Length: 220
Image (cartoon, rainbow, N blue to C red; front, side, top):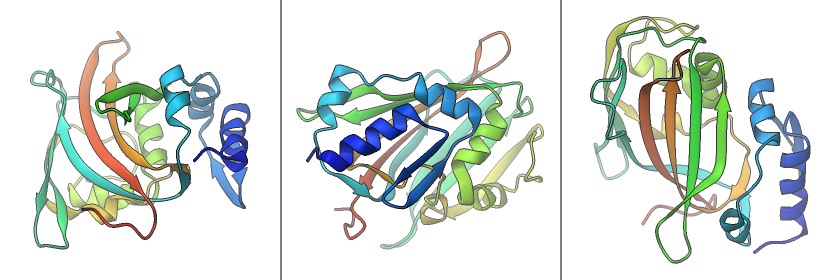
């Protein structure tokens, strides 16, 4: 339910995205991300969806898959989730880089929320920023080393070199400790992430669907 704390958090996010404090939590963003965040204005649909519970959460990945149009892209994220045991679900697949993944690229992210009457409502949050490699490393946060090691990518610095990197499986829980605000609105989300070159051509695209759940909740 929307409350004064929610309003304070939202106002702080919009007014001062570089360094947000909420209930003692301090959130840091790269300057490029801050600029994108402060220039963002919630759509009427998203403003309506904000009238729901928010708080600390844990992230549960539901699905991960390439965008439909990525067949001929020079950057391919051929990822999927596979259930290993009743308690362990793994990221599997390969990351194919026909060009380096570096800071000449731009990253565009569009976060959609699941509407109260069903269906995805886009533009819950829109990110458009340069220096894709550095930005992604920052956003992935503590999970980045698990990602790089799991896919056998030979460096933890930018750029990531050309190659096909295959994982035998990464426990998805090892990829959930990311550098995003620790307080947000509970619900179901989908983010479409597109990478573009200097010609503004899409060179890679991936989709992740996930839930933000209360700390004590478990997936059904």
